[in-house]
Length: 156
Image (tube, rainbow, N blue to C red; front, side, top):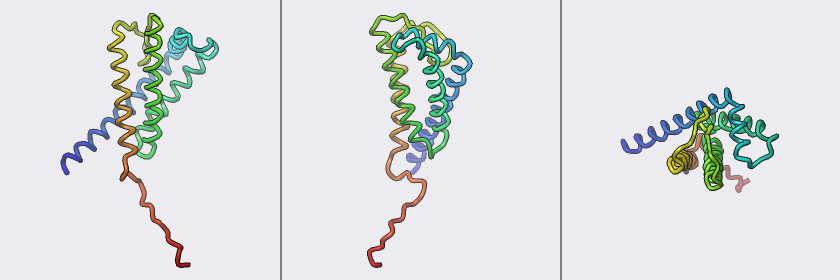
């Protein structure tokens, strides 16, 4: 009983912490959209005209994930979107590293030079795994917010 309660509290803190993290990062990126756009353009995966819309879309998605993780009813969808976002960030970072790009990351809203690629990839994979834990927890059986009653009309 106590063990289950501790696990539930830890998962709640993880969910709220990740929600706060996504909101914090989105807020910082919101004030530096030009740097985020330059980072997207530097990866050279999309035409330059797509830089600003992709930067705005990324910040909006991070805000949706952050707000969604704060509430139990929207946690599963937010965790799914957050997992997709973190996996995309990992994939973009790894492909830039493989292509030999000199990367400066704008991942937490401030531009900084990346010096240790294995550490950066491991850090992003850790965030991805935490999002998968939140997704798993939000999709477990037995976590319903209302009781479903089966109606039997066979005798009518």
